[in-house]
Length: 421
Ligand SMILES: Cc1ncc(COP(=O)(O)O)c(C=O)c1O
Image 1 (tube, rainbow, N blue to C red):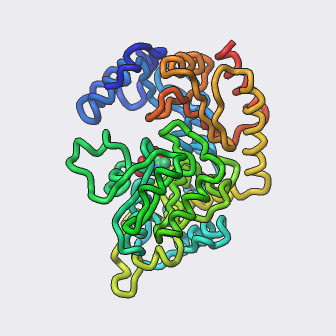
Image 2 (cartoon, rainbow, N blue to C red; image 1 turned 180 degrees about the vertical axis):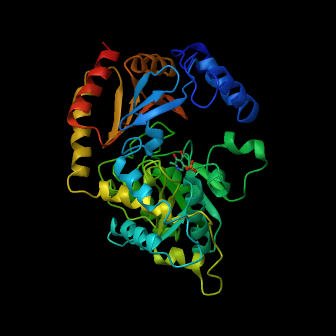
Image 3 (cartoon, rainbow, N blue to C red; image 1 turned 60 degrees about the vertical axis):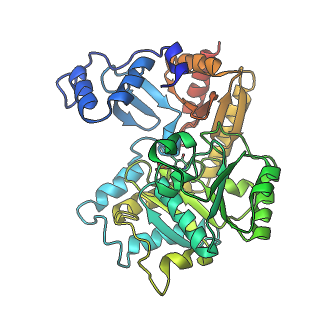
């Protein structure tokens, strides 16, 4: 239970509206309580926030019961960067349904090969090997396994308050609150503060397999890397023989105005991890881009099947992801993201928060959690959905869809301005 949520109440949604597949909202809630997650339900009830996602299209989604419409400026951390049900993605998947399924992860696959080569091309083939998974956490696990295999070392350094997922190695690299209920942490995992080169220098040693960093730590409240931070970490890794892994699950695929957030740092890591928006929210797929050297252990002559994932790189997911790459790769797309970012920066200048911003990856930082929650209430009253960062709740994560038209951007800016009038 999180006390700050108990102190304020957001507008109550989803009350007595027509059902979708349940007789009533109450029937749905009862069944959810019984079969899915009673405490998650209780938590949202205490907040007074009970959204049941109904119709969704482009930058909007609607509560299924109240029909309240919200512009999605959280986008599930970038899952919906191209909007909900982007017709180019759904169209590609619809055309493939009935002809393709997940395929066989052991066989050669045209869909997987094409997607892998296109992902590698975003970095001029600096990371030419791609291992596919289903979730971001799985893709992080792949990167950590590869680093351990390539170096023969076990120590992994991550950042306090960062987030890499809730699967095995990804969980071990994250916050104690998520791993403590499940027993002692795996050995070899160490955390240091973000943007602190001295702390990293003190932690990294000849036992270190890898440093894993988000390009901008989303859950930590989007602190922008200090100039030269990534370059310094790259050098420390090179000096000590460790690998640098960059988690781009939230920051990748155009969100920051470049293909990858780390491209702002002019550093080439040994692995880039992608997920969330890779399929536009239509089919679960994730990808770990690796150097050839990092990949060797995952596809060794001795055992080329040492790492497999049945649904990883499902051919239908590859079709969805290729449609996403088509859109992000279109001439002018990344420039549009940059232009939107500049427009928001100018519009937000007079508003009462500090703007953390790289492209359309934005954090609105207030003086306290209470101020941020008050702002969230006012923002939602203007029909805009965003959400606090889990590990710094004075920051609202603000990730509008990247497909905002100029008119939609103007409307969103008007709503945000009104929220603070
Ligand atoms: C930066 C980052 N890495 C990894 C993950 C894990 O992704 P998934 O939930 O798909 O396993 C997340 C999820 O929010 C994330 O934000």
